[in-house]
Amino acid sequence: MISKSLAKKETKKTFSIDRKYGKEEIKEVIEAIESDDLFYANGLKTKQFCEVVKKYFNANYVATASSGTAAIHAAIASLEIEPGYEVIVPPITDIGSIIGLLYQNLIPIFADVDPHTYNMTAETIEKQITYRTRAIIVVHLAGNPCQMDEILELSKKNNIPIVEDVAQSYNATYRGHKAGTLGTYGCFSMNAYKHISCGDGGFLISHNENDYIRSHNYLDKFYDRHQTGVRLEALAPCYRISELQSAVGIAQMGKLTGITEKRNYLGDLLTSQIESIDCLTPHKVEEGNECTYWFYMMRIKPEEITCTRNEFCKALSEEGVPASSGYIPQVIYLEKLFTEKNFFPGNVWPAEIISQKKITYEKGLCPIAEEVLETAINFPIKESFTKEDIELISSAVYKVAKRFQK
Image (cartoon, rainbow, N blue to C red):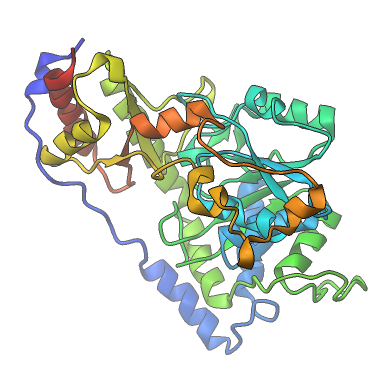
């Protein structure tokens, strides 16, 4: 049922975005420059950043990276999976979650998602496990943590390591545990658009010293910075961070709690204001969890409205609300890169050849995920938004829903 009081509210453009960087970042960067050594292995800022992250996440080990994509690649590489084996991944994610396993000549196997949290579940993952499964990349999408107990149980039962992609989910909590602290590796991004940023950068956290050393080596050409005697024993890229990135990261970490607490409040507030609309489903967060809303994604119920998703979205935009269709244009496996398996020049995919198994990516592989992206509407959530901004969004949603609801 649509609230008349909210439906009558007028919308106006506000949605201001504050500066991301300030005097705290400037101070740290000046100190880095004054040290006259910006190489991460020699300087103090990267070491300091790692200590800050370890304390914040109660992690045993932290390795820095040039991006979140690099962190995931290093995590997968450090598992030392033979080419041709399979890694389970979600279909609603950025290509950065998958690039690393493709470069390792592993095969992405897509597991469907929950229709309302948009995350993989233990049930959908289990359906894709075979004797060739060697890892699971769990993506906590849009600040919303996956149901990790069931996934961890599945991991233990089948002896399959979990790599957590936490690029969009800083401080998301699953039953009191921070996302990224439960798997073999937790991989974080400091891209310009994430909760915190140093322009670009990333890091991964781990609990085991051997895991840490291997991942660190894979991030730095396997140069064995820890002097364990394994120099250049494996092929590894150069994914090093710089002292300047780490300096900015130190200051950003000091702002992280405030950023995620505000986003959690705003996203939950939006849910509370639109959850009574019959023709929509809000962004679901499981009981006992906390979402830090990298974005907010609701869904329309096509059978209960008289317009298309794109028409609904356009109507919201006309009300002055920043809204867009879905998150990515389509599930990742329907992109040309996957449908044509154009991962390497000449469309030669060594992983498929080694596996002696024909892999096909086509529509219908993950029907729930496909439907989600066909019916989803995305709202930005920024820590600079106010309660009034959220009320403007919900007012516009009510107004448009009233217009199109059957």
